[in-house]
Length: 311
Ligand SMILES: Nc1nc2c(c(=O)[nH]1)N[C@H]1C(S)=C(S)[C@@H](COP(=O)(O)O)O[C@H]1N2
Ligand SMILES: [Mo]
Image (cartoon, rainbow, N blue to C red; front, side, top):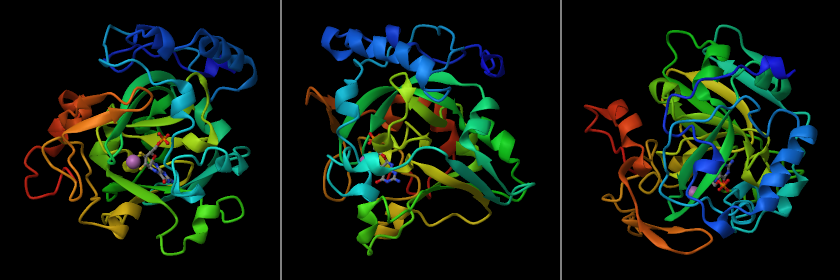
């Protein structure tokens, strides 16, 4: 199957092998690297881009978060509102998994995740992650550009938004018992945002298939936006002409908007966004506009001053 993973030429700064990330002895234990190599044999194609090529030097400016931290400190409300849902999330069966492609597309259909990953260029990318709650991580994803999924989905000319929907299965997700939340979890992007090179669909983390607590087997990653935009465990991707109502916007539109771009100068109504806490070290560092990815994404929002872009 490996011949079906197309070799991609690295063009952008975020396409960086883990080895180039600021080394901090403790932050990237050797056993994790060994574990990643071992998973190549057993984990199928989801976990690591076998064809990923070395990229030009780009330093995210931070050490990688420990895998142990990034996989045990999570937001996944379907399993509960606390950060320690990782054990509860193990009940989520990751295979078989199909995604529905629906709405304004040439041919609505279902696609098995294994068939999907054979059609896309798998890559490794190290991204900063900034939760709206002002904590942050830096993690190595494996996956493919969201634009590759759009090419497969073939939205029609009238499609203006992409809507991402998470599984909602009360048999395995105790959080769904909190019936006041507007399940299923949905998020959305404009088609232009979805075509941006940064917008990513992850199937792996730290060289292994994505664990349930991190949104396995497949999730969205939009690193210039607050973390809640990056919907987990996707079962449906649909295309609409109207802007969708999204999970957090429906809960509190004055606190969590549709755009949700990171901006240290725009406080959340209940706390400052000027700095963030790094998970693992608890160090506080200044937050950057667009989470430091402005050179890639700021152009998307040129002339949109009437929108609440940063909430
Ligand atoms: N379906 C779903 N997706 C979700 C969430 C959630 O509760 N449910 N939480 C979001 C929030 S607030 C954050 S910060 C990130 C956390 O991702 P991580 O746990 O992999 O770090 O997932 C996002 N995606
Ligand atoms: Mo978040």
